[in-house]
Figure (spheres, rainbow, N blue to C red):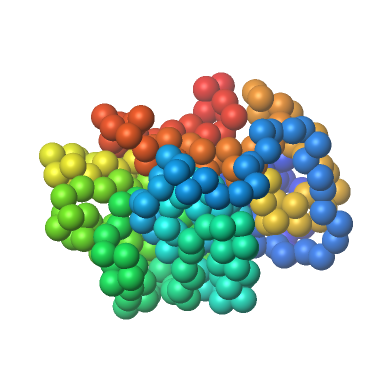
Length: 301
């Protein structure tokens, strides 16, 4: 790795890459994890069969860890039937088992959002099982290792764009026809603070998340009169396994990183899930084409 490049990365660029982390998240390190001692509201421990999303069918991409996993738990605890995918089958089965363990309903299916045939099969399987898709959270995404544009390989650029941007396009391409047939639905796409601000050394990640926000606006306009709402959510630094590995490697902690945020703490996945759930609820019935700033105030600076 380019040592000059590493020294040039600021903590802000390192920690604000997107859904939990982008600047260095491709660097998978062993080491200690960091506890987030800045308390956020604790999630409920069991399923509410009469919850806000009781009976709703919720489809989630990339829910085997991080924000997707946390959102799957949150919807299931509010009574939703969760149908989710991810590339890592072992983790997917673990998430499915955990949801069933606290009384929720969930089905995992292995799928890669870079592959059109996988996306179509995943979405068709959800409709075959449940007859509809009420809510879709297009969350699947990967990060880029730090490198300048001149140093970036085309292969890495294409892999990241195919996952983060084309994956969202393909998901909506196959979700929307089902929602049209059933008379409506809600889509939420996972964007990022990097979809609003440029951060040096993570060009493909930033470009992909700008694309997600643009795709969200276009889809919202195309289907606004069809009872289909399309919005996005933009997290900043979120307490995920990816972020914890990076903090350990860089010998920093949540407290230091949180100083870059007006709320002075790191957001947790339950908080992002609540933003997604609000956009998915009837409380947001007139909201479409909107990107929710879930950065803890970073974008207001």
